[in-house]
Each structure stands twice: as C-alpha cells, then as structure tokens.
Picture 1 (spheres, rainbow, N blue to C red):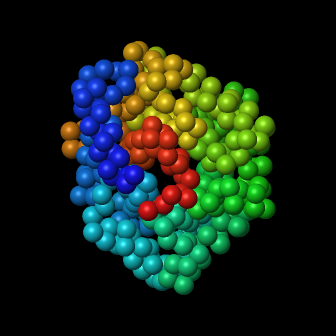
Picture 2 (cartoon, rainbow, N blue to C red):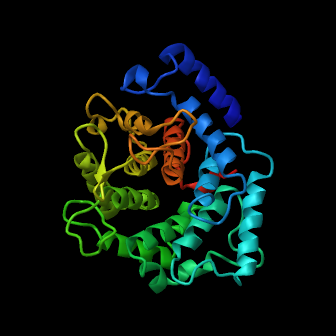
Amino acid sequence: MNRLKQRGLTFLVLLTTAGMMTGCGGSSTPDLEKALAKTAEYEQKTVTSPASDSLGGEWTVIALARSGEKAEDNYFEKYRANLEKKLKEQDGILSENKYTEYSRAVLALCAIGEDPSEIGGYDIQKPLEDYETVVSQGLNGAVFALLALNAQDPQANKDGEIQKKYLDYILEQEKSDGGFSLDDNATEGDVDLTAMTLQCLEPYQEEENVKDTIDRGVEFLADAQDADGGYTAYGDKSSESVSQTIIALSTYGIDCNEDERFQKDGKGLYDTLMTYYQKDGSFSHTEDGDSDPMATDQAFCAMVAYERCQNKENSFYNMTDHR
C-alpha cells in the first residue's frame, strides 16, 4: 500500500477511536500524525534551502526523507546542490578534524537515495575510513561513523573491517552503570550519548555481547528518568534528551509511550516530548522556552522514528527503504 495512503487510513482510525489523541497521557497530548505533519511544514518553511550543516540542513533533510510527509518541490535537490557547492568551494573537505560532518552528510544522502561515494566528484564516505581521526572526536565520532557506514544496507555492510573496528571501540566505552558518556573520563553514563550509542548498535543486536549491552543501555535510560518523565542531562532538563531516547527505543521496537519502564507521572515519553511542542509545530529546548532549531530537528527525528516503530517499518537509520 502507498505509504501516504496508509498514513491516511491510520489517521482515520485514530480520529474515530482516540479522539485525535494518543498515549497514556490522555487528551492533553497532541496526536502524533497531526503533530508530525505540522512540524514537517514548519521545518520546510524555516529551512527553505537546506545546507550541509548541523542546523538548517541535514537533520531536517534526514527527518523529512524518513517520514511519510510531502517534501516541497526540489527540496532534496536543493540540499544536494548546496552540498556539492560546498565541496567544490572547499576542495572536497567538509572538515579537517570533525568527521561527524561527513557522517551527517552521508546519512542525509542515504536518506534521499543518493550515492555518497559520488557527490560532485567526491567520495564523502571515504574519510570515515580514517579511524584515528574519527575517534579523535571520541565516542560521538565513532557512533555516527558507524551509523553512516551501515545506513545504506546494514546487513551487507555491518561486518566490514572498519565497521567492526568502530564497534569494538564503542563497546569498550560502556560505563559500569550500563550507560555511555561523551566524557571518556566520566565514571557514569549520560542520557544523550547512551541513547545515540544504542541507535548505532541495531545491526549487531543478535550478537550476544551486543544484545547484553543494548539491554543494559535501555535499563540505564529507564533508571535515568526524572520523576516527571523527563531527563536532566548536562545540568539541564531538555527536550533533546527525550528525543534521543525515543529514537533509541523505537530502533528496537520499544513503544516509548506504552512501555511501563518509561511511564512516569502518568505520562509516556511521547507525552513528555510533547510538553515542549509549540503551536507552530516547532519545539523548545526547555519547557518554558521559545522555539529552538536544534530541539525542533531532534524532535522531528524522534517523531519520525516513533511513527516508523508504530508502523513496523525500518528503523530511522536503516535506510534500505530510502525515498
């Protein structure tokens, strides 16, 4: 069935059975279908010419491409053109030392069905084979390199030599509490990096040692929740930590709003995320804050991941079903 048609039928069922609301939080939580459509519209209005950048660019492209929402005419073509222009202006170099720039661009290209090995005459996947430079960014660098290298076809790519090297590095970073941290010297895990790490382990989940790591990571995320259902990370209670956790749980088919481990104060995680939702479809960083581009991008990704989980589609980063 055509995805847009299927989404329409799903929405009709929600209208008649759930009063346009979803989750254990009841009538105060905006419906996922409507909220996702509103956010997709907002993102395209505010990011009119997506660039190769962490804000105003690739995350918007990735989320939109992985959703069933309609993209404006030539939206993805604009992104590719902007990326090619940047590569030509910089002699094929997106960054000298932040190779997450390459990982993010590879993910965006895979999401829209483009070949990252041939963009304006450059292979932007190639730098991710430079293990030392990638891990010089720490765990974050390795996690996103592994996501990018596996995105096109996880089952075909996951056992490559460089992929296994990143996997071993990542698994070695686990803290005693089952979490992962951006700080190599930290003794405890943090929410955001634990959630991101779980996202990249999906292709290896049948391997016993990896499965155990995933299970411990999920329990860490459940235990780390505040009493009100949110997360405090880096001294701040923010929507981004909730978004990353939703993406991680959705990766493994765990319903973030219905799983009892993640229900706090009468709310599931989707309910909690929507406390940051603004009327125009954007999201705030903090509950009482204004619209924030990074928070909106991450929440957009989270809603798409959750919808894909509910529809039993490929996970957010398994892009074998790209546009």
